[in-house]
Length: 477
Image (cartoon, rainbow, N blue to C red; front, top):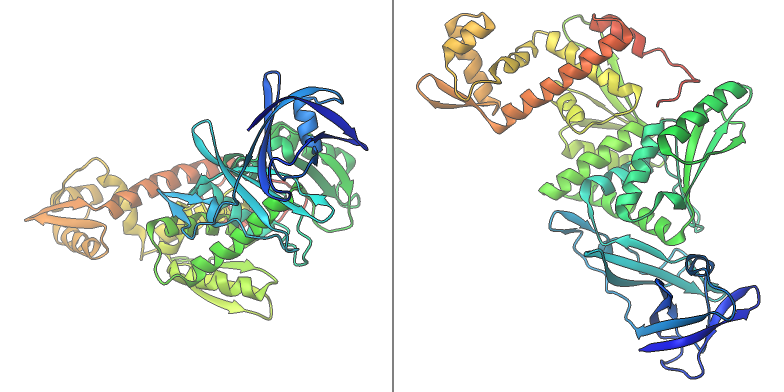
């Protein structure tokens, strides 16, 4: 129904609208669209003859007492949650929205169309009033949302108490904040709803260093940062979004998706993508890669994730096991650890695990150390096969400078590893896995070249030593 020339009234320190009669049953859920000149704003509320307007609506429409507005009102039903997490290769956020808040207040959801996309409008109310309304896209890319969850699992405030009114993501790595707010933007949360803070210990960081760190952040992110002092040993930036419903959704999504990945017997394609991006960001925040060269021919490599929550550790261990790692959980020292084979390193590099951190550089060096060893050095030969659609033993023999019988043995071994397929007599070609290996090696080779130029060392053993030096004051940009 449409009502024209409705007057805005003063109601205490707020504005509101008054209905001369009850058009709907009192307490029923309605959607109201307020139209003022060429602007309009929709919101959910429970119908009453007097409705107080929230501050964000007043500000958006520039409302004043005695303004005449047009109202469009319709009664709606709370959208039923779907049980299917995925829809056409995307995550369906309607499956991740809890029915109620942690305090038991019902969360209302209404689906609407915006710029030819499905969006969700969410709201909740309580005895003393109502919460801030939230609008998000219904369908979001798996990569963006699973990365956001991985980041928050590692470095977000989990709210063990029942008070859940804000998301707080803390990291020293500035690009991680950029990725976090980019993922929020893809969800439908604008950057201007975020607050940014920098906490430092004045006994460990000078005023000049503090200013430089903050300037770097503001330049990259494009937002102002509030500075505060703290007594902790660490320093870092914090991105804060104060919205109860968004916090409830992210924390509910974390538990649901982490449990799914830990307990699913075999991953589907969508679940695999979910696991890849979740783990990559979890490792960037809470993971460590340890590379030790006790033997010159092959390094000892292990990966560790630290978390004080033992339930989380069990989930991490289960996820890593499904991804073909060999995790061991140490509950006493609150970590899960796994050795890393060359195949594990390839996987970690491919999903960009540890990206933006010093562990990413260690991963790059670990790969070259493996390729220098006797067991894996022949993998580098795949780079020579890039331009060949099909090849025989003569190509391998000449390109690798080995005897014909050795070339034949090498080809047959790589067939067993599903990297090469035999087409007929003396004819082989790369499998999809083989082509993927080549792309990984090309990308890794370029990253290693850039790293050696940056550090000034070409020898991987010398380069590794420079990466093990910890600098407290350095923040990643």
